[in-house]
Length: 187
Image (tube, rainbow, N blue to C red; front, top):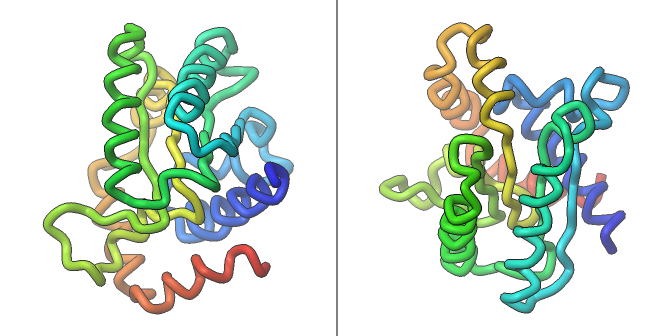
């Protein structure tokens, strides 16, 4: 199952994240043959047990601490069988943020969140903007802060990325984006 999950996540990364240019920094880590393609780690937690979910998060924290950026630049921790409820996922993500701080890694690592039912607070339920953080499975993305600082230094107006993403997603429309996300596993 892990291989199928990783394949679907990679298709999502290629078609959504890179294909729609939602993250202009992802291309070298996602597309095969690119310089950093072997430095993206996708870890899968197949358990539904809360303690196992917590341990999977802690293992990835430990893995990134003991790996250099040249070995692993970034990690996606995927939960294909757990955290289907967006509220449960948000609770888990809040706990993960607290664990990151308790581990003394705030400022070294940051977390980004993705979920099939991602919903930005205050946005209409059908807003296309939600698709910037929607993925085939619940995912916690671990980012190295020093790496992000370096790439942001050379990127003009990074504060415009969310505005551009919303415009791109609105041009496509929620119905089409939902269809594309649902069809990822069938590609």
